[in-house]
Image (cartoon, rainbow, N blue to C red):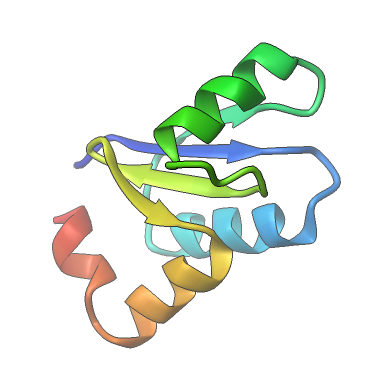
Length: 84
């Protein structure tokens, strides 16, 4: 299975929805909570080409985007091949 990383905060409903979709697909992921550590948010922003909102999702190091991007990718049939 691919390496999936998701930058989150604890109370973000979009983070919760993205994690639910990943769990539904049986994907194990690494969650990085940026809510309490500004250095983690700075690292996330650099990796996400300036994206400061959460979640920011990466699959095998490639930036997927946020929750809406993840769901759109799944709806278009592109998520499963990335995870295979």
